[in-house]
Length: 402
Image (cartoon, rainbow, N blue to C red; front, side, top):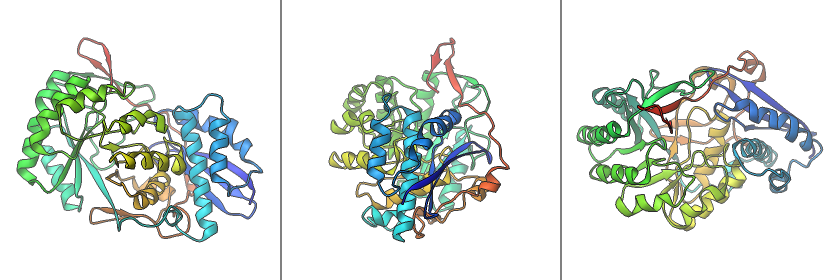
């Protein structure tokens, strides 16, 4: 079953997506997500110039061998561009494998470990009163877990707080916009937000909060300790994770669970965090961590150390990636939560899919393969539009994380 075509499709139905479509000599096709938010064309070029030509003539059934070929065959290993490209190939080959077998991909991964995939949504607003309305809206939709973000008093804008509450996309300009940040104002405001949310909704609703890498370890420890009375399911990305040892300091001071990993590319980015049990949830995702094949390895390692999955699932992942994530989520034994930001109707039309949301759970498609496709004619009607993620500076002008 030789590969005869590997096509890179770039489209922008509200935001940019990069999709790889692989076709075999038997006419079976598979799709994989290759989107890297704000750097989409870098991956598209990598696929077009370096990967696609090397796929022609290869056996589509040899998923593991192809993964190793693309990883070990690139002298410059790892990194978000390389691993997103590998992920697209790997995901598309799993899609083909499922179609040939006549089974949904999760059956090839060992079958169901649960009936549905618990997901969380994003409740965000400028004020505490308004965010309570947003949390109630998600609870009414059936969500059992909600991420809560509010504006920080004294700051004009806050990353994670948007105008469009259901279809949030932070990449807002061709050249990155700049905002200001105050750690002191943030640390003083967040505990009060969650005190109000808990008072309003009680202990049953799972609550999460994203720090967006903005703190130092001791600042993150202070935040985690101040949030302990409100029993969060996790604080996400409390510090930049390049220095994995930094998480030891957080662990020494708080029992608030920690989630990290949406920017991780390989198992080596989280090996120490997992092995030393410095985190509770690993947030790596299919498209940025080398596809289903490699993400399964990360999840298996995590499971040995009581770390659960909590994969990234923002709108910068296309429905192709979401479909792949759900097949993995439904199968792995150490699943925790899955982020789920709804796509726009335009995106859903470009990427017809069979997964569905019901009563707080997502359910993967039962169709052979991933159960998702791309409408190439419709995709062509939405040309690429440059868009970059914003950056932050402290009040004195110093560059800072998000």
